[in-house]
Length: 307
Ligand code: PBG
Image (cartoon, rainbow, N blue to C red; front, side, top):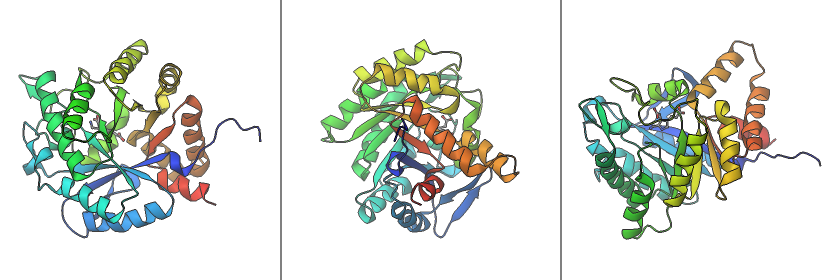
């Protein structure tokens, strides 16, 4: 009766990985219990996911190295497997919210979120590519676009591109405060998308900065973002709280791959009670102020919440 914070299955967005081919279900080494699916096995998995009451997924593609190039051109090819998969999922699960990721890294031969020239990221040239990517995803049937690239000005540009093509109902969940974090390691294993050189510190945020998160969020808000995201979640609960106090749109938090991996590792060693630790982590993200949580724990937590 006096509990202040609640957690519901409908708070979750389940990040999932897809690869080309058929009959594939490959476990990610650093993420026990999380798989890369081909479209056929993904559709089977989605039956289970939706039966648990999970209403939203965030779908990430794994592209073979030979499909990658400097310009991430595979990302907006009409017949590319990722876009076709979005359309197929939407057809079979019309009620399921499909979120997509906008950044060049899974399609880039440089493994960076933006276009690289002479070892530097070109902000404005990247935004044009992201616009094409976002439009292609919207046309394929995505409901929420998640720009995770951290270029400046991309939210306004994307909103404009979407609106001019008639996609006024598509939401943008902006990765506003995305930190240059060690906790993305397992995700980059899943997508085989680690940067080929350097790091992402020229566009992702310094973990030491808090005021800068407000500035990033303010820009995204004023450019038309519908939701703001903080990523990672656990080392940045103060940032979640800060954004929730300052913006009257929903705040999301990404409980990232490394946060999943470290808890799983401890639980598998018998060093922690995995279920209890998972539920404590998830409620703490809600308590900090996140309305929704992107989490690889979505299925496991749903099983517990549905009991
Ligand atoms: C792509 C992207 C990343 C994640 C989500 N979108 C990796 C990165 O920025 O290097 C990380 C998610 C996770 O670790 O679970 N830009």
